[in-house]
Image (tube, rainbow, N blue to C red):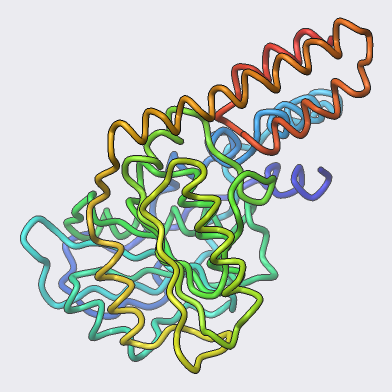
Length: 341
């Protein structure tokens, strides 16, 4: 909780002016973002990325300490981005691939350029966004800021905006995709993922979670010799489908280890992620009903513990409910929390 509060209370400074819009395609280095995006404010990230109990604990902790939640998570004046745009925008606008790396440098993998150009995707990545950086205090807000700058500079097709990453960056990208399904229509996760339904990969509020089920496509790409992450990919796909997100596929790269996908693997991943999601209405309704039933059943058990005066057991089960179902169970979590006070 201490590290969470530190990252969320980080106060951003002045924002440096960015270049004019209307650039042609090409490579742009040391880009400065001109406007702090509303989607990357601390309150909005807390709403989308934290479980209800975690967000409530944060607010209560701030209130007790007399501190306030700063609006900006990171000082964009010191942030730098690399952007690559294909020479010509496709009809309807560019697609976008926001990339979160495990390293600190902001660079486009050289053999990705031609693949991105053929797909009509702008690539954007931030410097100082590696595995040592704060997830909520830097990596996620920088990813959102990079997208905001691409949208300012170029015509963008909002139906073709994707988030991706490598290794630890892929795990952060997955968290972004979970929290922002109204922004990103898919994710390309290279050698890193987490099963959904934990504090590391919680479900967002229900209105957003339902969009995940009807809009988001998940492509997990890992080398066959990277056995730990390849096995975790399979567990992640199973968990996504259990949460009614059926558009999830895992690919193992022959002869590869824990490494960046090459051009061929990227091209295959893009070909998959751009496919529209068309869930079966009947199966989706049944899946959602199952989730609601599970939450209601667990809420009933917690109420029984409360009525028996077993506050400790009730509190433990409530924490497990919160971690498992996240924003899907937000209403029940709020009701039960109030009943325990």
